[in-house]
Image (cartoon, rainbow, N blue to C red):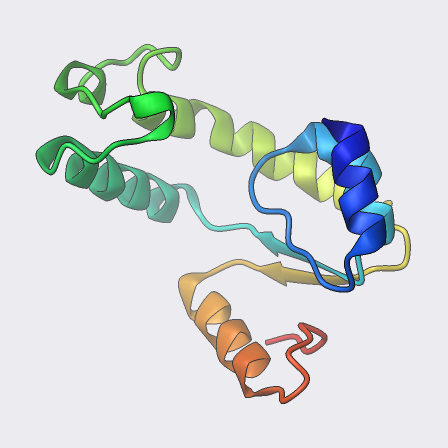
Length: 138
């Protein structure tokens, strides 16, 4: 999979990698012009995960491989069963880990966003640019 991603990154002029795919960092980060780090606080993250999980459970939205959000997992405190428990448990680790990793970024412009307001401002700035690049920081 990493070889496929490396090939695509090399072939494409513009691309986006989204999520906690740390195994892709060695392939994608050196080729990136801009790295955007959404470093939101734990309360914001948890609120969003809970709302998204409730929505998926109520409306029985299909996830990956045909899975659906089970009501039983919403109240579980086991991070292996509950995305809510996982988000609560892992957020401090991800924050520390990404902050450490991003100190060694290979010349890419680093955009560190720490609030929903900063994210909105950044997205407005990006959408206002006629060339579509993400070079500006909010």
